[in-house]
Length: 335
Ligand code: SF4
Ligand code: MG
Image 1 (cartoon, rainbow, N blue to C red):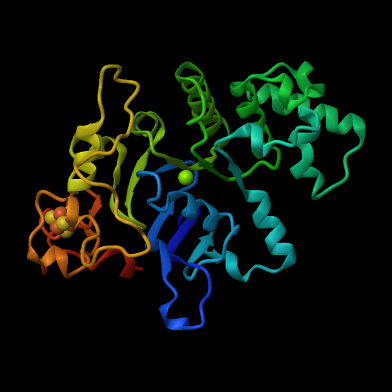
Image 2 (cartoon, rainbow, N blue to C red):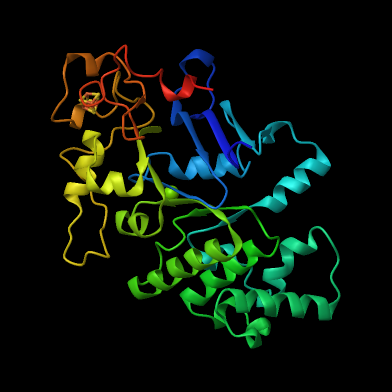
């Protein structure tokens, strides 16, 4: 039985405005040919600088936006084709936790109402039922069940994020998409929330797609890591392997740029000279070539394919992962 989540050649282009001359409308190439899978109970992290397309991937997974091309499969079923009942069933299995719990929580609802709202989209709960479910979920996320009547404004940042997690848990999902879920929190609170997510994963077997710009967070929580640059995955590797030895020059630059005064806290900074180019008019060939110290002529012309390496990672780089006759075909074309 295949992976829980499978993403195939996912692509999202946003047209920039509309024009009389249709052909000349520029597009933002937010996500370009992204493929990966997530096993039940696994955490796949997606890491990259702001603007690399990682949040768009989250929105595509949640069907908040439609892909330009490519597919998202849950248990082998394409979510684009789901009709009413199947769509409901799928919505129960996949939930999202957002970066800013304050703006994503309705300020007029109590904790109990916020937490049970996803459930009440499916079934009407009586008052007692709602209170009991909310208290149970609050306990699961390490909060006092007495907090069911609190408003978001009466909670701390960490408590609000716990509330967002309790809400996501209410439908007993198989998969949670977390987009910068701890980025707005203080370091000590971040660690508590990450540990909570790890505990929940162990207890309930939940899989995570964990999107972050913060390498320290990723190292703490990830099983595998996909590094994105300008809409594409450039390296996807088991977490330990990636941190021990990055292969793609961009991954290497990210890790090298991360200051390590506090080893639990590696901040992603602009890693190398120059800025990330615009996704409106990305460079030809390898999009990283204007910033890459290893670039050769070919890099300016050909997009490097993702090539599987002997240690199980895949890397898109003409120099570090040359496609040879011995390599398997690029990952996107594999079954
Ligand atoms: Fe650098 Fe070329 Fe590899 Fe891109 S393909 S990362 S430009 S060496
Ligand atoms: Mg984002």
